[in-house]
Image (cartoon, rainbow, N blue to C red; front, side, top):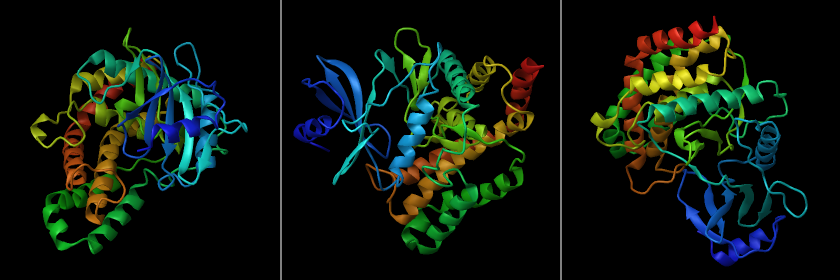
Length: 355
């Protein structure tokens, strides 16, 4: 972590009035270092050091973000702004990293999981609004901040390479997960959809990347836009499903607590439907596939990282990546078993309301 003196030195590089800000480290996410900047005990800004090891093209990342944020503002979508540096740039860099500051939305809150249908509904609604606000934005200027982020073929190759190089002890401990991954890779390959239009997607729509109002419970906007780039709607759909329909933490060890809550799924679909018919028929048909694909992708990435010795994700204990993987694979399996249910629910809500 960074000292107060270091953080104050960094603040001087941005177009902010000189104030006695207080800094509180936020232990959220696995990638960036994040601090809440408060003034007189009131949160005002978010200060982040962007992980350059993960995001190699910081210029491209910040250009994606500022370009999208210029469109992400509406009566039902709260605007977040990037604070410029004194030289008019959206970030500042030194030998210790790349830094940015964003405005904080007052009286906002995030949730890691939920049991509330209203929260699931609002999540679906705000993701739909996000996509409608960006659907006419020119896509070509957006770079891939993490190339092939949701590319199943790439994740399979990385997994197989890790298998060939991992110590036998890790292979033995992870044997159950390895067998499941090999089986699910075949299934997903057979299910892969075609004819899906490219959109500007968030690509990391887990529930805690949505801000909600503390007062009304309404969803305000999406945050953590580092992975904002071209993609498919079923990516954002599937990533939201894995953290909204499952009420257990991502690394839950007791798999009996991992569930596929149909009432939350239905509420989420109803929320999307409030935005009207903005999805193509191929996109709608691909949604159940996305609900299986995304938890599996996160699971196989965690498994690969475990096999490689935990070099990507932050871990607080040696087998945390394996626990994440097993939890995500358990939900993947439960989503797969709900495939027909998802198809019928989507057909009865999104398709019926569009006609």
